[in-house]
Amino acid sequence: MDLDFLTVLVFGVVGAIAQFVDGTLGMGFGITSATLLTVLGYSAVAASAGTHAAKVGTTFVSGISHWHAGNVDKRVLVAIALPGAVGAFLGAVVLTNIAMDGARIWMALILLVMGVIIIMRFGFGKSLIPQINARTRHLWPVGLIGGFVDATGGGGWGPVATPSLMTITKHEPHRVVGTVNTAEFIVAVAASMGFLVGAGEAGIPWLAVAGLVIGGALTAPFAARLAHRAPRTLLGVLVGTMVLISNVAVMSKLFHVPGGIAFALIVVIALAGTWIAVRAHRREKAGGDSEAPAIPADSENGSDPGTAPQRHQVTSA
Image (tube, rainbow, N blue to C red; front, side, top):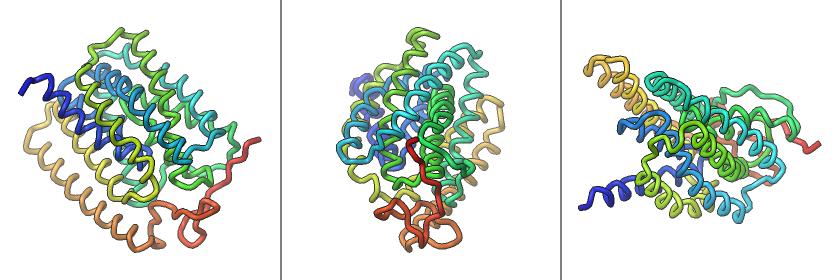
């Protein structure tokens, strides 16, 4: 089989799975893609630039799909997308000016933190973002920080924006996911422009990008339709576990950690992640409990007073 075709095929499968998860959870595509490219030996700049180049295509399809599915809040979209674009452009320029080893360490550290955030959110129902009262016009820090972290870490828009909006707005989870996915198109375009300004094409692996776009575009419409039906806790924890494992491997290589120690740590993370995922999925199927309501239940007014934690309504003033 031709090597170029095999590359496109492999990344097509990865893109399809990653976009399905991202479209249902509001996070996962960037982190998954950037992690894989980093593990395969691409520089931090190339991994992040390639991921964002792919996201221009996948988020365009995903955004349209979520829009048609009625999963987008227009006011919140504008409030986070524009500052998100500014943060992504600045983050891309910053990443291209960090020394190569420093950039890989920086990216791995950010992705490790993102993995923890995802597991805490979907495995334990704990948001690491503090609850605040906010109006729509006050949501710009969510976009700015999310865009910056996304560009410098190769992923992070979803893990920052999705749990933040789930905490400080009263929208149904699928509305948050749809809005975040749609805004990500603008963020991806801005990040790609930043990488072009900072480092040209930065060694972007275009065959991998092509595979990610093709695979992601195929599953994006289905993910938008299933945004509030998929087993989110299970998928979320498994994504977070994969991110931790992959970036522990990267950090072990960078810091020359003995193989036996690195392998033992990966096994521990894998077992713990599997246990958390199964436990969270059982709790979700049972309808939640008072210990950790991982995902607020949907209802007409966007919350279920019986199981969902109280969240503050965002107003449009």
